[in-house]
Length: 187
Image (cartoon, rainbow, N blue to C red; front, side, top):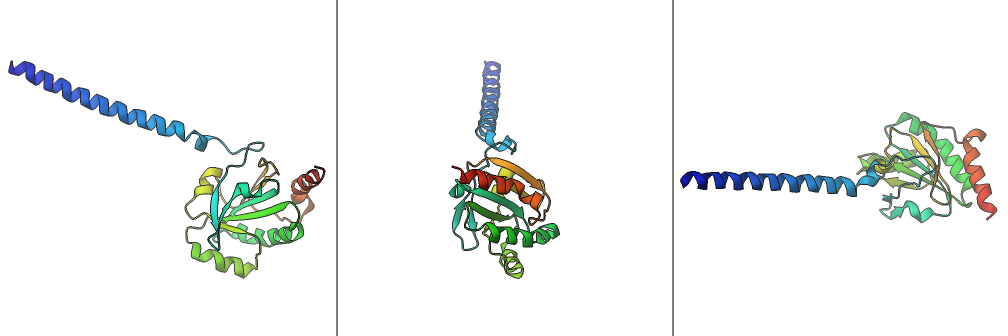
């Protein structure tokens, strides 16, 4: 009789363990399934992943706030020498296209946000800068390094992805942006 009770207790223990393992596995499968979007690649021709970050004044800014405009989305960091070299040409581009259906967003991936504002002031940059110290947008765009730039059309579709720095005053660098702006004027 004692042996039967012991076997029943052992069977109950194994049943509980199996049930707990199944619940854990089900939870993992559900979590991965609900986060499926995070595994989709960011590709030319695909929708630009939405994000919301704060600017230097702590005002929240969403990418979708700029729907209807050509968006120049640049990821950078204060410690990145190529980023620093690229920024003056970005400033010239921003000033040249400001007021048209164009917006430049520079997303700092610096973890130490105290370095960002002095960096911006030192280079005399006037374009909007957003802070991504928690890596929200960084993860959504699956960055491979900085600088990394995305040209996004008026409908929120990525039309160009640039890895590394570029001189944004050169005509070949501006071609996609100018074509998008010209196409937008015809609407």
